Length: 580
Image (cartoon, rainbow, N blue to C red; front, side):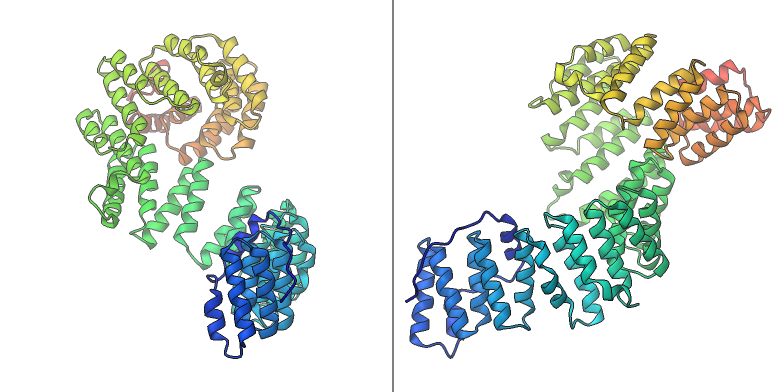
């Protein structure tokens, strides 16, 4: 019998994950029964291996299994030896078994794949080139293209990402020169480069894909990943790939990214395309409803949201399932918002009653409190907010900001300001809380304090575009320090290109600096991207100053339809004594 000794186990969680991606472990008894050439001694050896394994001696079991696999040249026994080592976190032992299997059965793709996975898990990526080339050799074109996506996913997990990118690129050189595989190869290389912190190299790969103009699954993934670092390059590649294959899931991911950038018109276009191509795609109806609500298209939003709920309810197993999904909860909240905008509080409360899960109570209770507050029951509304759960700092923060919003809506700016200033130290240091405090200081006429707070926010979060925009707009609106105001607003636009509200600020500062034509151009673009009463007020005033009074009145009328209660719009029309 073999001389056994305990193996030194390594903590390799990644290898365990690799093992679970393979077929289910084969029991030793099944493997031995299937081996017709197995003699009694070998049968006894396998039985002893199983006993050792069951008694918590994986090292002994591994040695017996690997020896049996070598004697019988049985792939299932090699697999079992590899799995026992992986499950015991013995990486070097797993690699030894996989390589023994590969040497005994050079044509085994499974053995070769285990070698690659284990080397990656052991952070020995530099040794993966030969087995990687073996993996690709002899594959038909369609199989090779499919394999490139899998290989990319495996190598992206490597700890040494630069070496992994170099190995993959070296292995794919022949694919770059073959018309059938070039697109998939460049997509794989681009993803590996981006994963290795080389966005310039990823952009180069995207440029090659643009020149090839062929569909590739990996190209779509590269585009989505590239958008997080170079949105323009990623967007160009994504739009090209969507021309070849219009995937609704990809379009919705793109639409959500556009929403983050406040490119609402482009997001609407993508969502509409999804609905046209796949009318039963639930998420598209929910996002379309949210966008229509944001644009105050209440009737259209209501139809979209109810269509979403109909689709969700058709998929549920029980009558109440739809009331617990996060998407359905959001739909009910949006429908309540529509009813509240219409001043139909009875309908709003009826929609909120659909939300029965206590974990979703914050949104529903906040809206109930808002309804009470506008009926003059402010103190009762505040009690509703205060009675919400406050089990951790996040919940306490949410409650505080909800109460502040109630006070703001009731124009009790001093009470809201004092509430923010009384926040705990950790919450008070929150940049969003500081930003809200600055906005309330402005409402109270404490301009110096507002500016101080916004500069604190900018210092703490240099990427927080709202602070730059608020500070610059405040200066422009007071017609003070206009060059500095323009610089601040442009910094905000650099952080959020195309944001219509920041563009509105830029248009307003250009107008204040005497550049009315440029202001009109900027504001027209912003208004087309986001029809909004505030932007309408500014655009109308610029047009009025240019003598285009009928056009100004037209814009103001549209703004009043969007939000008849907007203070800026009402003040502008009154100040200019515009009549129609």
